[in-house]
Length: 171
Image (cartoon, rainbow, N blue to C red; front, side, top):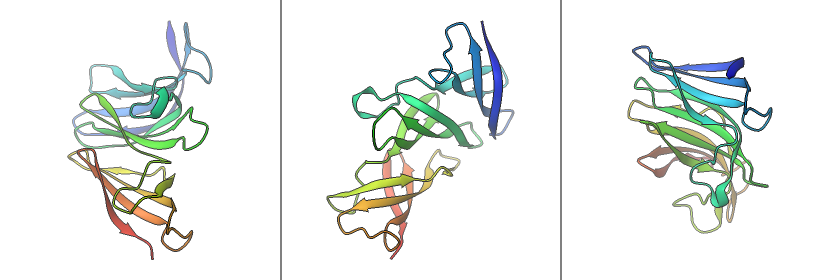
């Protein structure tokens, strides 16, 4: 069987809903390959949200999660995860799980919408927030055409319903 070997941080919803990050060992588990798991528990036992080695939804070419951690949970149990993928570059991003469906929010290398051709997400910060409706807010640095480090590269974004909206930008 599979057993827990360690627990990382947890996240709290309401009404007994919570999530946590754990490492597991046992039959079929390979250290560094599929041993880190994000769980949600609604009071009837844990269910897997995502695990290291799973295909990361919304990525090009079937990238897999090489690391992931639940960062925030709202009152209804929707969760935002910070993850790294198997991509050689641009391998950091945020994913959200709402109602048991895991979707990509943003990943380094994605085009920054509304800022013109040639502007891309360069650094996704690992401290996102999630509101009651499952919308995500996050800080990211940009790179590309017209972007100057330390001047206009720092931004705040909101994601809701699959749409990214720029909230604020330095400069």
